[in-house]
Amino acid sequence: MSDYSNLSLWMATFEGDLTPRAPLDGDASADVAIVGGGFTGLWTAYYLAEQDPSLSILVIEREICGFGASGRNGGWAVGELATGFDAYSRRSSPQSASRLLDYVHGSVDEIGRVVAAEAIECGFAKGGVIRFARSRAQAERQAAEVESNRANGIGADIIRLLEPEEVRRFARPTGLHGGIFYSPCAALDPARLVRGLADAVERRGVRIVEQTGAVAIGGGSVTTTHGKVSAPVVIRATEAYTRDLPGERRTLVPLYSLMIATEPLDAATWAEIGLDTRPTFADDRYAVIYGQRTADNRIAFGGRAIPYLFGSRIDPATERDRRSHKLIRKVLVDMFPVLEGVDITHEWGGVLAAPRNWVPAVRYDSDTGLGTAGGYVGEGVAPSNLAGRTLADLITGADSELAELAWVGIESRPWEPEPLRWLGIRGTRAVMGWADRVEFGTGRSSRLGRLAYGLLRR
Image 1 (tube, one colour):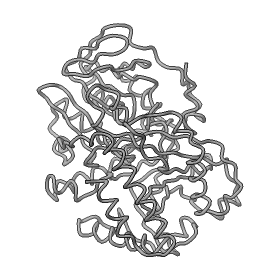
Image 2 (cartoon, rainbow, N blue to C red; image 1 turned 45 degrees about the vertical axis):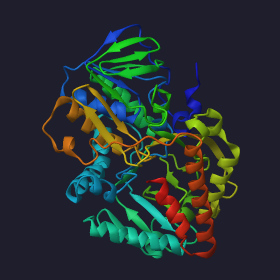
Image 3 (cartoon, rainbow, N blue to C red; image 1 turned 90 degrees about the vertical axis):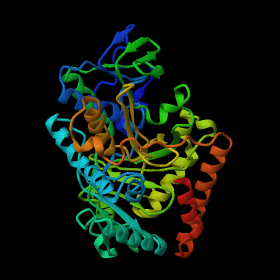
Image 4 (spheres, helix red, strand yellow; image 1 turned 135 degrees about the vertical axis):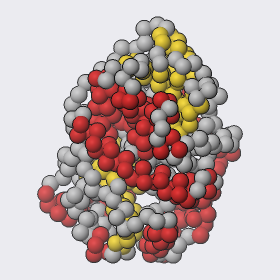
């Protein structure tokens, strides 16, 4: 049996039982079969059971609930989507895009409501996001971003610019030129949330089977390693692991993100860093970084040092890449020099999923009963809650705004075949890394970096 406590800081410090639930014990039937025991699958099960307790719902998980990104991520429940207003506006209308973003913003509070109602102790703290501008170029991009948000009707209650002295009230990184405060975000322990959510759906009568891999998914059935499940509704909630299903290798690419966690820090160290209200934090470099102050006073911090492996491969050895973890530590110490010499107690990693159009979406075909949601590009903790609510309404046929949101029904073309996929992803990420070095070194904005950033999302 795998030692699931090694997956992340969150799993290592989880005080509950990580023993796998029993696998499927032969052929079975259900009203709804959900493949994937992460946030998307479990939220869908939660809201379906709430809407219609008479439904028989079966969640099928290859490992244990929270094995994938849901138990390894940075613990940001941030109310935003990887592709913003313009991408959804082009596919629907400005009004529809605004409505979707309003719901995404509200998903943070909805998670907080469920956490309280279900007594899930996951360190939920709605402190917003502080994104530092640590070069002149980053400050210029932030100003343009806030201006664009204002033009789209998003007010200062959601996002606002900060002067350097305002940033220092929240945190005290080096090289400040300003910052952004984005309010709809909570820091949390994702493993405690996903494991608590699994317990909550079981209390509502949902059956979860673990150690049961899905071999094939089709209309009306799921073929697994332990039997066939017949169900008129089948939901695929497999995110980066979608690549393991027949015919799905180019649907979503698995992109790696790696993390470290410090030892618990003392009061004197925190006095130099800040983060008293537990905002999540990052700066605005192209190569994404992200961090939080945990409930037990560590810093959990991550970045995307090795973005992609040839052939959409998922390799556990990459999750322990020492060189990448050292680079992530170097970035953290550069931001907060007081952390030089502090012990790093945990190093881990995992894969997130990106569709070719970079646009998270929800899809459900009432004729075939097949549905899916995801492609969150690393920002799925809060949007997966909205995706679960949306799928529940689509499945039950509820008369609601959720079923009409702008992300419903969006399709993405497949990723390019290899070696074009590897060359494109690794090449654009290399250019963005180079652009960050230019901007930190000179302060000048890199047009090539902006171009590469845009090309990766076309």
